[in-house]
Structure formats: structure tokens, C-alpha cells
Image (cartoon, rainbow, N blue to C red):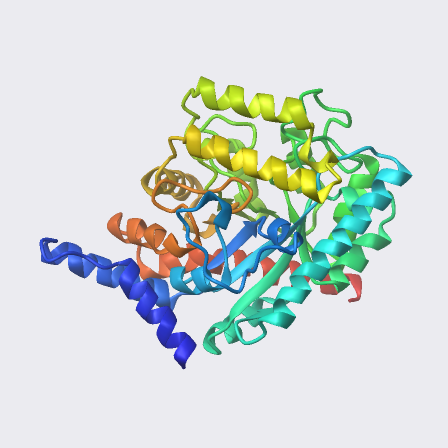
Length: 414
């Protein structure tokens, strides 16, 4: 009960208004806080495990969100922001498509899984590993947070389908098929060298079928348009875009076009809105910032190629210094909800959700970390969304997909 009281008090404080605030605004904020407490809130993507696996950062303690070094998520701030369930991503950067590359990726994958499981063991009174939709609901009732796991980039599968089941048994419930570069499964939406497979590879088609068999959700964020349409053709189950937005509002290849959103809805899937500012609004030119980051990566190379922990620590510090010296002008929650409005007007409220990409670049001017998640609910209430609508957006739609994927897997004899 102490933990529940802490959550309720923190939520109330996050919506605190001054004496000068008009009474209707006070009532609106109070109603938003009530709804935010009542509904199941699910974030389908964060990259916080990259911090967990470092070993020098404690997710169980509160970190000052004003400090760039604090990250976007820790367990006390999840409670403060009223976020009930989080998909912690096992992210693996893309390297060579060789036996050696796959082996190294698998080693890193297991290290990150171990870190996530260790978090749940260490802070069992606050968070538990969740593997089924119903887990999130009973954990919320018990006053605990739900830790789901997704894999960002199917690269560690290599060319061996058995690794999909292995990672499923370790707790993963979705796989983002690729990341920023093409891999053995499919083409990426952002590979500078262009497509290799022109969609899914033959192996990628087998991956989709195996995921359907296991009851594992296929995630189409990051994949190319051709790969997206291939997935919808091959998948017998609904799919998700775990952290993408509307291309009609922000023209970026990481976002989905209107036709893609329509096809996703026809598939029964869901588009989870991403808080990465550059996917919400076109980035404002910031030449000094861009030049500083270009120099940083020219100096150290690709992050995933840096093996030394001491060098990584140096790069992180220089990265934070650039952020502080050349701050980014970020999109707002209003801008994000414009994307939600667009999807709702296009296909309906049943096909949209939230996937922040916190600790992977996600963060808005007024929802810059998990403690500010209630601001999304507040803006939805301001725009006239009902409690039932908000319940769907915050988790109901995703859970519908999750349940359907599991049901379809039963036809494979599971």
C-alpha cells in the first residue's frame, strides 16, 4: 500500500496547478490524473537496458531528469509518471553478416537479457518479468511494474531459426526485424546503401512464420517500405510498429505512410507513437550541434564497434557535453498528439498506442522522461478523447494485438 500511495501522490503532484489556474482547467487536470491512474499504461519501447548492462548505473534509485547523464527511465520515475508496463529492448547494433559477427551479437544479447533479469531479481518488490498480456493487469493491481522484453534487431538470430525460440524462452515477446542497416532478415528504412533484398529475404520470410508459430509479435519499426508490405503478406498474425509515427505529418522514412497505416489497420495491428523529436517534427537545422556530433563519430567510429568500457565512458561524456552545449529544440506533446489525431482520423482509435524510445533518443520538450508521461493523457483529455479511447491508446490496443498473436499461434499446435 505504501508503494501505491507513493504512485498516487506523485501523479497528483505531476498535475499540480496554481491558485490562478481557472477552475475548468483544474477540473480537466484532475480528470486527466484520474484517468491516467485508472488505465493500464504500456510503453512498447525503451533502450534503458543499454544503461543496465553497463553495471555503473542503478535503475532502482531516482535520478534527476535535468541531468543528461540520468537517462529517461528508472523505477521510481516509472512510478512517478504512472507507467505500468515497459518493454525493455535488447538492442544489438548491426555488424557484419558473418559467423563471427553473429556469435558476438549473441554474446551481447545474452548479457543484456541477464541484466534485465537481474533488475527484476534485485527489485522484485517493485517490478516483475511479464510474458503474457494478463501479467500487466495483475501486476498493476498488486502495485508492481511490469517488465516485458523485446529485441531490437533480429541480427543475433543469425541464420539459425532456433535462436528465435531460445530468445522467446528467455522472455522476449517481440522482435524488431532490423535496425538502421540491412541485415539477413530484411532491408532497413535508413540504410544509406539502399536495399539488398527489396523486402524480406527468403530467410526473413521463415523468421516471420516462426514468430507466428511461437506467438511472438513481429515489429515493423525500422524496416523498409518493401519489407513492411512483405511482412503483411507473410504474417498470419497482426503486427506492431513499436516506435514510429505518421509520415504525412513528419516526412521521415522511419515513419509510416498513410497507405502503410491503412494496411496495418487492415492487418489488425497497431502503430505505437514514438517520442523521438525528429520523428514527430522535422528537425530544425542546428549546424553547430550536427558538426559536433559528426566530429565525435569521426573520432571514435560507430558506437557498436567500441569494445573498451573506458573508451565508451569517454564517448558518453563527450556526447553529453555536446547535448548541453548545443541543446536541441524538441517537439512537444501537442505535436505528438497531432500524430495520434491523424491516425485516429485515418483508421480509428483502435490502431494507435505509445512507444517512447526513451534512452534511445526519445524525449519531448514537455515529456522528456518517464516521470512526465501523464502529460500525454492530459493533452488527450484536452482534445476530447474519452476514458475508453485513452484506455485503448495507452495499452488496450497493444494488448489486443498481443492476445491475438498468442491465439493465432495455437493453430500451429503450441
